[in-house]
Length: 417
Image 1 (cartoon, rainbow, N blue to C red):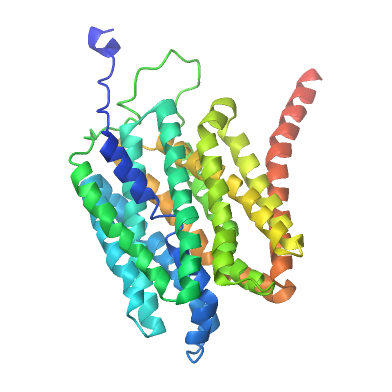
Image 2 (tube, rainbow, N blue to C red; image 1 turned 90 degrees about the vertical axis):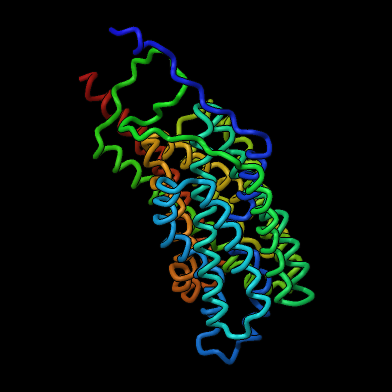
């Protein structure tokens, strides 16, 4: 064997502290960006009551952003791989500031929906660039740790911005749109902090720049077809989990208004789920060292189901808030878990495109959430919709645990005979 084949791989360039801070600040403007105006929805419905279909269209002010992210994310992934992560991140932040604050001026509901779609294009680019930069920078446990930190900051964006949005919405339903101006400041910071980005060698092998690992008896990397099916499985799981979780900003304001809750308290209650999401994300690296990705997924889905069962069966605001806290922990586990799994499956030169697929799945789930849940809400009522959805998620988590166990038991029983 040639000596060169045993030479350790060149270590990755360590990102500077300002560069890491810029990426984490950008992450705060992603997952809950559309939900910033959630506390304003009841007032918006009254303002635009004369518009045909206003009830559904006002809810769509959240979800059209998600649809635009889902549709544009694959293009963002292509731009990230071919043009670079830094240009995509900066341009996304600038567009987010412009399109987000446009809601302060528009007076037509359809024009408002158009600006929200542009916001989605911006957020899709930001998320794709952030994920690609992190997986370029780090390997192994450090990658898991920073992906958890990324999700924590994304959740903290909700913790900071949603209560602020609720307070502003109590003054004027348009006031929360000012929050999007923060993106302009983050863009200016990113321009100075991210002066370079990692060089990605065009290769057919995943993780080519990773630090050398100890010899392993693991089976060889599965064929491309198997890898593709695993990637698609991650996408489906992300879509379903997000569809369920996004019932919080799209349905909960109306459930809480039935309990006499104002916009400020509504924003604080919804922000609770993002706070525990941050806690879950910070705990993810330690969990990942002890459990398999499949076990973490089952735990995440079970927590989300249990939280929504509590929301559906609660009769007062307190238990509803507690249910959101439980569900938020589950989401805090699942997002970095799926992100890490995809980064392990993707080739470095295609990582932007593969991670953009996760962005598409997450935000397609956000867009489909009110459409998919609306028939259930119409048939059973808001509270019962949470109950049925939580029960379904708990059942899926149970099957994820029982299925493999039953299969192993059957194989062991057959072998004994």
